[in-house]
Length: 373
Image (cartoon, rainbow, N blue to C red; front, side, top):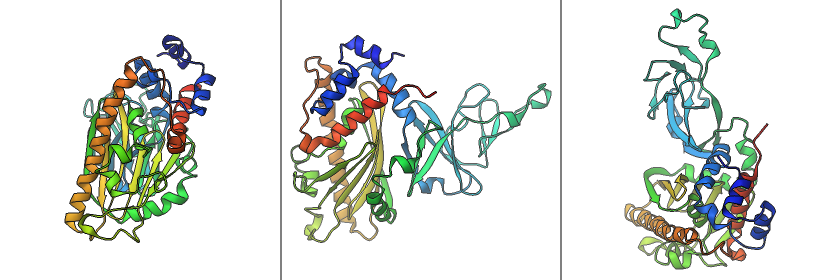
């Protein structure tokens, strides 16, 4: 795998200080960072394998023995709920011949690899291997699954493939005063459905689209722009190194109800790829992940406020699906611009897109980071 300096040399990119200076001046990241295969490989290692990723709602890990599959940077993971309700996460690879230990979400008091039957406890410790008595020096107590980091953010569960990662509470400290109320409101909502989308674009193109609303009055004129105040004065954003915050008033509700007095739309984003949001009718949590240098997929788990008219909920969910499909269409078209090789970088509107500047800086700094140790 090439280093960042080797990638810069191969594609004729500026120095690290030059890239950061261009970002500070309002340029985007260099275009090859959105399509080069070597960048995709580096991001898997330095971004996704070292950052906190949304895994699931806590209800999927509520009972002892519950297991949930996840992934980070191409690393397969499994999260378990222990007998006392404690959560643990492991690399989902058997220590025998590297077969997956768990192949689907479920519930079991033991984790048994289906290939040769090696069996682990919910704490990751090897409990039994067939024919172990005939193997000289074989010691189950010396073998366990490789543990990684797991943590709750209110009702949401996150994983980090780096066991020495900074605590999630530390990474999200800046935004917590705002998400405390957001998640308290969303906790009362009921799960309804999952929206899933596959895009022919680099994951950063989709993520950057998700964290700015400069495009909302045009791209989403008949969807998001109809639902919420999306103009410069109404739509507010705040950025920190690892988190971003959006809020906007509701301007229209299906059925002609008066939106005055409603709390409005609130959105939180955790670098590099996780997000959750709520308004007075629905809420969602989700993530985007790369599936190749120029492909990605995203999902949103949709929640509904109890007692809301089913007709209103149906229309609101349909509008959100429209928003996300419009985003997919826009980012697919945008990828061709990055790929054409004619424009070295874009020019941001920092008064409306400072969140993008923060996201791009954080991403590039991750690519610059030296290996731990």
